[in-house]
Image (tube, rainbow, N blue to C red):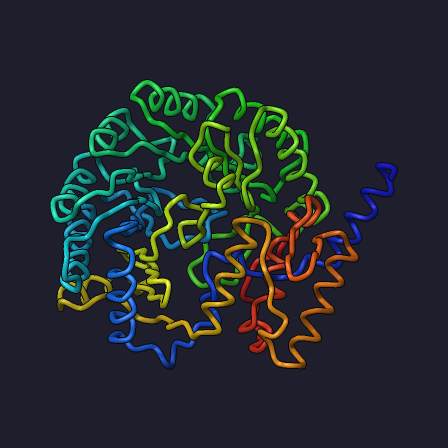
Length: 462
């Protein structure tokens, strides 16, 4: 097929499949949780059940949300609080430790931690000493699995050598630096002025100290991005040779409450076709530099644990994104965090004042959640297999008659478009289909298909 025909085919597929859809860090996705049926005692029961099944063998994961930032990045859809007042650090850390003690009180044996991730916000808004107090307060109450992995997100503009050394001394071996884009026009639009030299400095420091896995996070689809700019960004990134890369699609969701996506217009964003070209150009450059594409939006060098996990079909996906940990239990601490017991989800309040009030009253700061049905558990496993392994065994009898017909028609349509191959009940995503992974998962998403909403809930899939 000629390049012209290939481009035309891709344009047609983008027009057909570029619809709003989830990123599937959970199933069911948050907008389709049955919150009216959720009760805290059900959540705690599901957590105790999962803890008893996973603690001794695989341990548990902790995600800690640190929401503070000194300035607002206008591409960001995360929960954050903008302040330059660092007096907020210690009260928040004390609340986190109290929240952890509330959770630990539900377990009848000492938690074994296999994974800790510090996210935000800007974790490196907090001083190295504050982070040490937080982590020691948790680590002194747990045991560690033999292959534990601690990681954090570092802002290249304010991550110090002291941050990196202190966290390394506490057991952290993986760090992720938010790069986004090096084009000064794009940086100005997203309010993230960050010179390449800052990224080089923190990357070099991390290697000097001894971090095993250094990751750079890039974003495509940002306002004013052009092909020449993304090539320059990726060439600079490859020059620093991070072990792992995230190449995220910009999620344009300005209608969500509290979102900081402003200062540019819809027409300042790349078209859907250009956005896809940005990704494919980046992917080609990464692969030529020795990186392998992992799942969706991720790349890794052969020496990285994520590369090995993908090859062994040991990759997992949860609210932290892709992870090599297989535990059923993820406890999210901090404002807006989401916890996962495999059998249920629970989300903390997004309101910081309410978070403090609930913690001070010795209450878990959970305000909504979902307990998975037997059907949810089957669907969850199917979507995880697609997102992590690019294949899944399907069961046509897993749907009622009408849903079965619709589902099989959709699978046939995907196959006709070259996005997947069906061999008996085995579905395998093709190379072309990787670009439409979210669309394929949507065909399995029974709750979304049954509960169609007129509201805008998700960013576009392409």
